[in-house]
Image 1 (cartoon, rainbow, N blue to C red):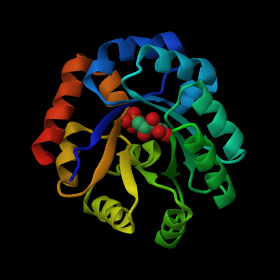
Image 2 (image 1 turned 180 degrees about the vertical axis):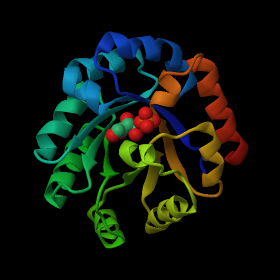
Image 3 (image 1 turned 180 degrees about the horizontal axis):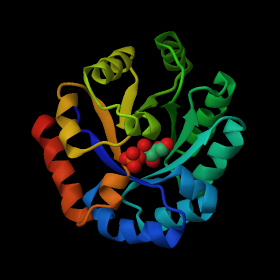
Image 4 (image 1 turned 90 degrees about the vertical axis):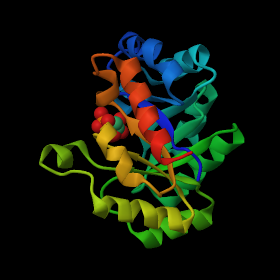
Length: 216
Ligand code: 5RP
């Protein structure tokens, strides 16, 4: 089973704030995500800057696309995004257009599972040729007392059994990583717990050590 990748989510308001994090974190992790907040404040430029400065990292544009899939995914990939996100609730036509636009430029599209979706839909996406999904615990749910547990592992396992590559995100702490042992996770996506750590580089290494304990 492949070792999961580690991704930082740059949910910053400005590129300079984001660069303060990447300067320290980029060498310690695999994927740099231009978060939705940064996409909305300075998307194209932020993607271009990250791609230019960090050619060895995978760059994700977390655009959470709901329409105009081809145009938006194409634009992000032209600026240097490797992967781009589309909401699960978008029309399948939007997902396919985004997937085709990304793949035409050597990239991939990820379906973000937020709100309502079914396993039947996930099977359809797989048949349509979509490769990746992101299983997301919402910030609001976690703030209202939710947590990562067996129920979530069952969902991730089922999605992996359908043949989709599953990344996970939402308030992930180091302690949560072990719960995914034995499940093929594509990437762990961490925002605040990495960016706001007292020593982000040491914290990223601790996440990597934790991942290495359970996957080789
Ligand atoms: C919000 C997101 C976040 O970037 C992602 O979930 C990481 O956030 P956190 O700070 O909870 O680790 O996609 O929609």
